Image (cartoon, one colour):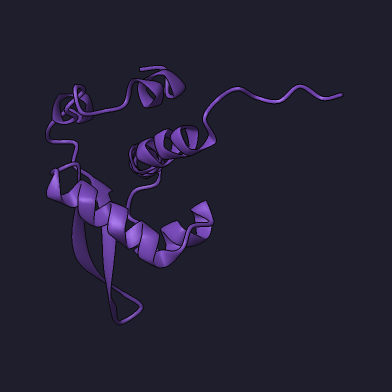
Length: 109
């Protein structure tokens, strides 16, 4: 007979959901650090995320000053491209006290 977990499923799910936005935000920031100048559409295709989800996290990172959106003309069309704000160090801008320790551990910070 298979052993059953003694963990409380509702609490485990709540903790997982709580950390997810931070993980996604950090994952996007890490991706953007090596893939600057992409549009939200291009980022969503490369990461396999919904465009609205990418837009949400880009907006969140932009409010924190970690990324910036620059309008560029490409093929006679106005495109919004995303760039990591390297004027200030990324680690300096992250409030380490607000990040779930599990996220820090996962990304070896």
